Structure formats: C-alpha cells, structure tokens
Length: 313
Image 1: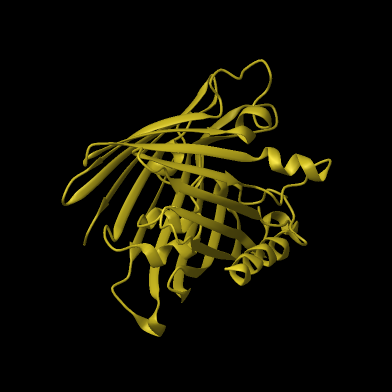
Image 2 (image 1 turned 135 degrees about the vertical axis):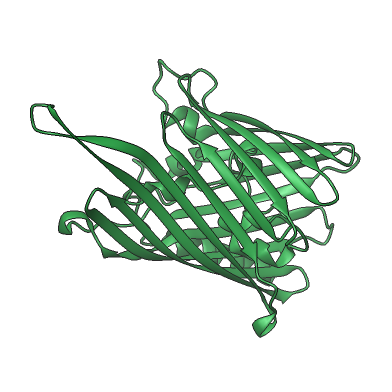
C-alpha cells in the first residue's frame, strides 16, 4: 500500500511541474455530463460511469455497463455544446478502450465594419475535441489510464488546433468503499494557432477521493482541481476545490448536490454571487437506460443545464 501511495504523490508532483494556466481552448474546462455538473465536478474517483473518463481516464477500467453516453449543455445566450462517449467492445493489450467527441457552437455573428455597420453577412464559431482512451490495471485495486486528444477551435476563416494527453490513476482502498484518484488533463501543444500567436493549453491537475458512507445511502466526493493555475502564492491553489454528495433514493433515483469554491470565489464578482458555485441534479436509473439532469450556477444571471443519457449499444 505504501508503494501505491508513493506513486500517487509522485504523479501529482510531476503533473504540477512546469504546468501553465494560459487559457487557450478554454472550452475544455467545460466538458462534462449532467451527473458530474450536479456534483460540482468532483468526479475523478467515480466508478462504473463512462463519463468519468473525461475527468480521469483510469476510471474506464471500472466501467461494466452503459457503454454509450450523450450529454447536451444549454449555455447562456445561444451557445450550445454536447459530448458523447462510447466504450469499444475490444480487449486489446488486456485493457479497455473508449472514444469521445465534444463540441461547442457559439451561434452566428453579424459581419460589421469598424463603425458597427452591418453588411448583412454572418459567420460562426465552433470548438471540437476528439479523444481516445485506454485503461488497464496495475493490480486488482490499482488502475491507470491514458487519453489522446485532437482539439480544434475555429471562428470565421481562422482556426487553431492542438494535441493533448490526459493521464490518470485510481486506487481502491481495501474497505471497498473509498477511492483515491489523481489526473492530469490537457497536457499538449498547438499544431496551429490564431494569427501565429502560440499559447499553452489549459492544463488541469486534479486530486481527490470519494467514500460510500457506512450505514447511509450517500456517496461523498471531494476534489482539488485546477491546481496548475497561476496564483499569487502556493496556498491559493487549494482554494480550487469542489465537494459533492449523491443520495440514493431507492434503487432507481439519485439526488445530487455540489459546491465549487473556485466558481464562487474566483470566477464570480462580489456583487453578483447569488448561488454561484452551487449545483444540484437528479438521476433516474432503469434496466435499459439512465437519464440525468444537472444544474449549476456561475452567477445570478448564468445558469447552466445539462441533460445526459446512458445506455447499452
């Protein structure tokens, strides 16, 4: 056990070394599903949920059913996005494989000159992320995963592309109720850039755990996230935390609540907080399909709604 914890610590230290927080391809920070958004993104240790691969590719090894998922996100204004994931029915190299695709469409924009006079034409802007994942086990309760991404961002006739790597590990404690995870997301480089100006990708280092409470139908999740972001001092990194609770109401219904401290105290201005940082959601599970809804608030004027469907194909 000591050796496994040393590997986790080394992984975290290595991941934070040299990480930068410039925010090219910022839409990568928004990728998720309804369940994860309801839990405020504290999702890197969740088992048997294909969507968790977006937060920690090591969780892919725990996926046994619901091999296809789709999520739709209604942003503010006319911005829409979604993602889909599929666990491949192959067992090459004794591991598990999955693919995912994510998109964001920002709607249409009017062409206008420097004086704001429109000429009647329009253009659009889109972001796309395509990824493949592989996961395997180190031993019966210790897993690792790798993801390779191709990322594209385009607006009018301009575009930028990049490749990135996701890394993750997941360790299940002997009590079979506690998981510990570490993931390093979006480590890569641009292939092409807007107007020849290169920037770094939004690297995201995450560390967390979850625990099934004994005698209580609750899964508690806790994550530090965005630990690689630029801050004034080292201690401020640990203000980027989220917690989430999933309550099991019988066999078919889950109620979820969450709180993201970074959203409330860093991304929201002091006069417009409302319930920013708080989230909630509902999951309905049946024999053939799972349906999830997640609500999260970024300010009193920005409420995000996600809807997800998971099933077997």
